[in-house]
Every structure is written in structure tokens, then in C-alpha cells.
Image 1 (cartoon, helix red, strand yellow):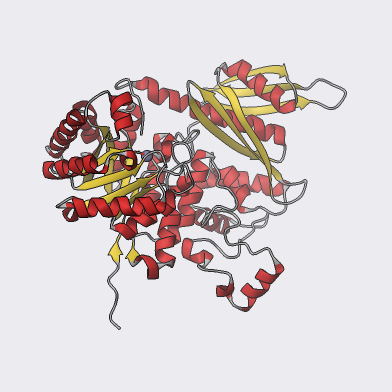
Image 2 (cartoon, helix red, strand yellow):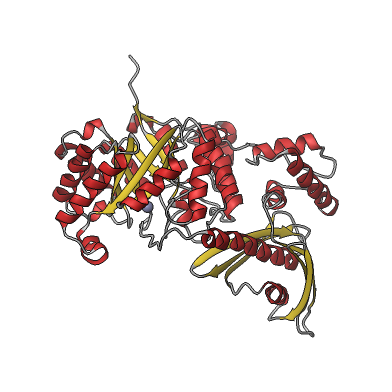
Length: 519
Ligand code: KIV
Ligand code: ZN
């Protein structure tokens, strides 16, 4: 039997754009660049690096990524207007393979209530703006926002028009995560049959996960003829998120018999990419999350363990190594040397320079004096925040608490090199510590979520705390761990404040235009 030719599916990663629109997922430029480097190692075809008109920070991030990351297409998002498109071009033009990604909604509900224009006006705008984008770059992607709720014949007319105007990729988003797999299959198939010339461009899909169908819809679209999928690491994104890259890629890989398709993804980099994103954003995936969740390869039931020990394929459809997971975790301790520590950092996806490694190693030794076994999560907790710029640093957080006294916290912070201290009471010791910090910083941010969990082990374990704060509509999550959960909470809060500071700075630097992000 001869080889079956596999169809190439392009992976368009939008973690840095749609993913960043996730509540609490804001990243600074350094973090975005780090993630972009990892996406390039992962082997994605396109990195959508941001929405350059959104803020000076977004623009800088896209420009920096375009300048540094070679061999990958770098896309910048733009609404269908000249100002956005020119701004996107100005950021992506440094890339080896720049892409302007312009979008406008095609559904009647968006035309009537949001854009307040007619179908004819929309058609003109879409075609003219693709022509305008094409005057800057060869690669122009056009997205018909809310395509899945648009009238099919009108959508096909728009697609024909933008292809004639020079679009090289046409993207069909299920913006609100409404469509179902069978319907989407027919929708994409119909577009393929009705639009002459579609075979000469990339037909892309972009599925949101509001009904938990983002991945299923993307896979259906591939069966119907789509040859690009837009997705994010860990499925992060607006509301319920976007289709998860790792799930689409592994479904195509494991079920080649069904999809006859392949991607350029180096699957061994999947876990590392997922971990890196978690460290940067502080947003963990649920333990049972497919491919990258903590339990995705754990066999708990005796009957399963027995089967796997006898023959792995009884209960395993892919090996953990295939997605870059270590079957046997190497647990470090106080006798572990720098070499083992460095290897561990690499396996966890950290790319630190020598100075950062030294700093992290010192923290590791410190922790190893307090705690016998140091697990991966412990390493995450001490490394992930050690290499970022910090405006605020917690020097100490001491509390008096118990069942017969009111909790009282005394904290000391280093604020831009100046030491400041204050005290406060609260409902409990954590509340008191956060109140005391807030008295110093006066951020006016509101704590909207707080979570504490133990990093394995017994009562000697570290408490891993995440605190989400909200300010002016932006949700930002800080994370930290310590053997004392009040200290961990105070540090997590300070971490969130540092991120908020950078977030506000990005916005305040130079607001480019008033922006209404509706994608
Ligand atoms: O969900 C959406 O429609 C989008 C577009 C901008 C592609 O994110
Ligand atoms: Zn989207």
C-alpha cells in the first residue's frame, strides 16, 4: 500500500491576542516575548501577537515579537478601518512573514445593533479594507466576525469579494460559540462549494467554547475542508475561551485514520508550552483537562493500573512523553545540585539566564532547608515570579491571630526602593494582611477571587495562593507560594499589584485610540 498523503493543517495561535482577552490573563511585553519564543519552538505556523491599536503596550509587544521571532508568520489584528490597519502594519512590518489580520462582523445582529450599517455598506468596507491592507503586505487575513450566525449567501458574497481584493486567508469564526459540529461541517462544506476560488486561499476557522464545542467544531471544519485552525494554549480566551491548541493537535495526531491530516507542531513541546502559560498568567488548568491537566495520564483505578502495567495501550491512547510529559517526576531535595536544578527548570519550560538561575537556585536551597521533597509545583512557585520587574516587594508580613483575638497584620513593603510599613486588622489574618498592604499601596483594586491549595505533601507543604484583583474592568491574577499561607497570600496580592502596575502603565503610556474590543 502506498503512503496516504496527509493534508497539512496550519496552526494559527492566538494565545497572545484572543487568549490575552481572558479575564486575568494580561501579560507584559517580556512575558509575551517569552511565550512567543516557546510558540515558535512548539512549531505553530502563525503567531497572532496582539492588537496593535489597542494600546502602546500591545503595539510594542507585537513589534518586539515581529523583530525577534523568525521563521513564523506574525499577525497583528486590526478592525476594518484604515487607522487600525496602518497601526497593525507598523507593528508587524518587522517580521520575516508579516500578516495583517483584519475583521468585521457579517451577521445581521451585529450589522443592525453594533455597526449600524447595511449589508451593502459592510461589503464595500470589507473589500476596500482588504485592498488597503494588501497595499502593505502580501499576506492578508480577513475574518467575518460572527460568521456562523451570518446569512450563508451573504457571507459567501463577502468572501468572494475579499478574495478578489487580495485576501490570502479567509477565516470563519464562531465568535459566540453557538454552532454545533454537524452544522459547522455543513456550513464550511457549503462555503467550499459555493465560493469559487476558495481553493486558492487558506480557509480558516476560529471557534469559541461557550458550549464546550470549540475543539469539536474545529475538527468538524477540518473534515469539511478547512486547512487552518485558530486556537490557544490551554484554550484560554474570551468568556469560556477558544478551541485548545493541544486538544486539536493531539486529536489530529492520534486519529490520523479519521482526519488524514498533520500539523507542523512538535508535540513534545506541548506540555512545556502549557506550563509556561500557566506560570505567566497564574491561571491553572483543571486537573482533568485533556492532554495537559495534572491527571490526564494518571491511572487511579486498580483495574486500570493493572492493565497499564501489563500493556500500556489497554488504557493509554497516547504516551505522556508524546506531549512532552515526564513519566517519572524527578523530585529534588536539599542535596540536589545546580545541574539537576537546571535540568528541572528546562523540563518545566523556564528559560532563564545565568543570573536568574542563580537567584532561583538560592531560593530553592532556602526552601529545601524547610521542606524535604521539592516537587515541580514548588519549583514553579519559586521561579515563575523571580525574573520579572517588581515595583512592590514584600519584606515581611506578620500577623497576630487566633480564636480569642482580632486578627492584626503588620507588613513592610519595598516600594521603588523605599521601605514602607503599616498595620491593619481584618476579618481574618489574610484579610488583615491584604488590608495593610492596600493601606500602603492605595491601588483601589478590588479582590474578586482568592484561592489557596496545598502543593502536595502533608502539613509541611507550601500553600499555593492565587489572588485575582479587578481594577477598571481589568482582572489580574497574582500567585505565590510559601510554607506560611498568610505570607503566600500577601505575596500573591503583591504579585497581582505588580502586574496591575505594568498593565496600567501600558495603557497610560499612550492610549492610541478609544477602543471597543468586541472580538
Ligand atoms: O472571535 C472572533 O470572531 C475573533 C475575530 C477577531 C477573529 O476573535
Ligand atoms: Zn475570537
